[in-house]
Image (cartoon, rainbow, N blue to C red; front, side):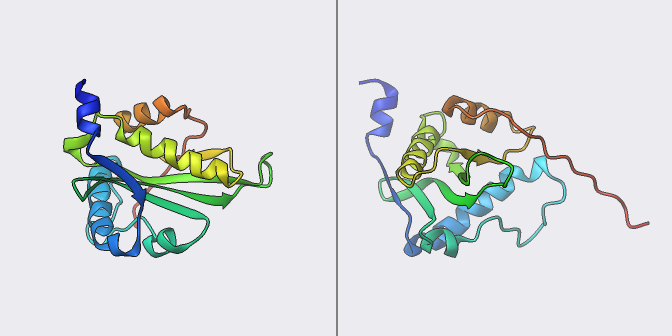
Length: 163
C-alpha cells in the first residue's frame, strides 16, 4: 500500500451539521489568517467569510467535512446560486470554504471534497461551477486547476485614502 492509500484510509467524508459549528468557526478563522497576506484590507479582528447557519441548513447548500479519527481536518461547500441573466445556465454551483489542515495537505483531500460537492450538485441538475481565489495564491490555483477549473475573470480593486 502506498503512502496516499495508507494516509487516506482513516479519513471519512460527511455532510456537516449544526453540531460542527464551533469547529467550523475555528477553521474559518484559519482560512482568514491564511488569506491575510493576499488582501491587506481584511479586518484585523472579527473577520468572517461564511454564513454557516445558512450553509448548514438551506437545501441549496451542501457543506461537507473530512474527518481523521473523529477530528475535522478539511471543509468545503457548494451553494446553488442564480446565474447572471447573460449566461446560458440559470444557476450554478459556487464553491467555497475549501480548507485542508496543514498536516493533511498534499494527499488529494481537497480534490476528493470538490469531486463530492460537484457530484452532489450534478444530482441537483447543476453543471456549471465557480469559485473565488486570490490571484497570488498559487497553491490554491494549482489545486483548482487539477479539478478542471480555469481562470475566467480577474477582480480588480483599488483603495484610496480618505485625505
